[in-house]
Image 1: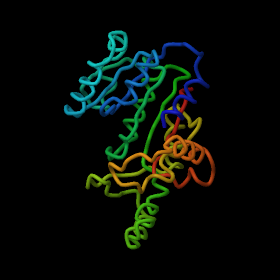
Image 2 (image 1 turned 60 degrees about the vertical axis):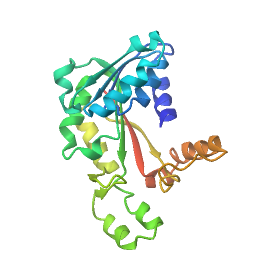
Image 3 (image 1 turned 180 degrees about the vertical axis):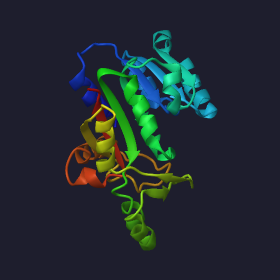
Image 4 (image 1 turned 180 degrees about the horizontal axis):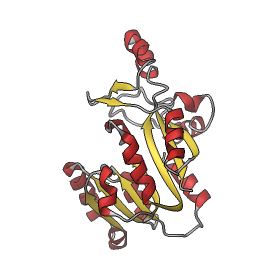
Length: 233
């Protein structure tokens, strides 16, 4: 996903430009820190105090220049208008968040308002068109059958959450003024790997395969996750 995001940034903005980045629901700050290390000015917004603590601890271990380029705010992604002015960012990330939001449209509209004209909105969502893949590959036939007609599922944490269909998000992004520019699949072949499994010795080959599949039909359409990139008009 990081490679996909970098591809979109390089293709959209002049090389060397320091971008204003907002990471909504940043978790432990993996992507936010990566972009701060790349020279961008990054703001991370996260409502979970535990994750905020982890992110701040990670940031504290970075060189001063990187610490100065990143700030962390504890808050809800649905309240971006409280914290920031419209058009304040060149790039807005919202990765792994929508599945926990029952009504995502207001959140998405708020994220789009944060973008400057030509800005990039990056979403990572659970693929509602491929919910039967994981139970089917594990031999859970009743679970696979039920998954065809729903966008609800239970994740590996035991939480009842929701997925998004590409067609529906395409329509939503057009409606909020950030129409879909590109989309990728994420975790096409590796979704069934056990949590905590060790990376294989040839991890670079694995990443190359996933990257290729994530941009190639029909593979990307059955990926566990979808990475959608919209552009503010």
